[in-house]
Image (cartoon, rainbow, N blue to C red; front, side, top):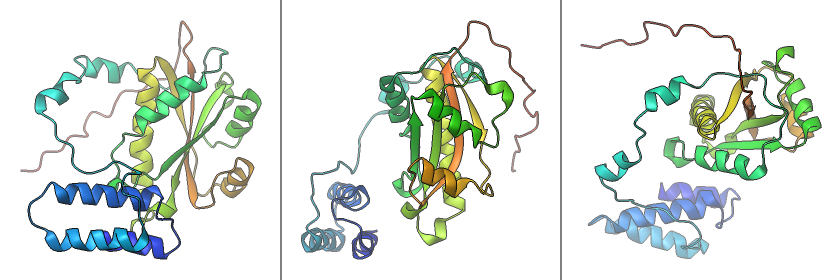
Length: 248
C-alpha cells in the first residue's frame, strides 16, 4: 500500500490529493496504533519526506468505538422504513434546495467501498430545463415521469481504480453507492426512482461533454427525486420469494 502511494505520485498525481495524502494519513495513523511494524513505519516516513506529503491535510487511521455506541443509532423500525420506500416517478412541482441535496449526498458518501477508494461522484442541477435535458438522455426515463424536476447523475471514476479492478469494482461501487443514495433521499422524506443508463449507450460521451463530466468517469445511473405528492399511485410487484440459500 505504501508503494502504491509512490506509484500514484510518480504517475502524476499531486502529493496533496486525497488519494495520496489521505492514504498516507490513514496508513500512518493505523501503523501508530499497532506495536511493531517499525520497517513499515520507517518506509512511510521516508516516503512522506521524499514527496513532501502534508500529514494533516486529511484525517485517517483507526477509530475506536463500542458496540453500545453503534446500537444507539440503530433505528428500531428499520424494517418498516426500508419497506416504506417505493420507486416514484411523479412529484410535486418543487425544486429541492441545494442545502437538502448536499445533505443527501454527504450522508450517502459513507457507503462502503473497496480499499476506501470512494470512486463515485454525483452531478445535479436545480435548473428544471437542464434536468429535463438530462433525463431525455436516460434509458429508463418514460413519459409517465414528466413530473421529475430534480435529478442526480451518478458516475464512477475509473481513474481511482487499478486496472485489475475495472469493470467489476466500478459496477460494485456504483451499486452500493446508489443504494445508500436512494435510502438517504428516503430518510429526508423525499421520493426517488432510479433510471438505468446502459453502458452501451452511445450518448455516454456526448452527455459527459455536455455536462462537464470527466472522461475517466462512467455514468452508472440517473436518479430522479422530489417532494412526494399527498397521494401516490405507483406500480408494484411481489419480491422474489426464494433468494435465501443455506450452505451446509
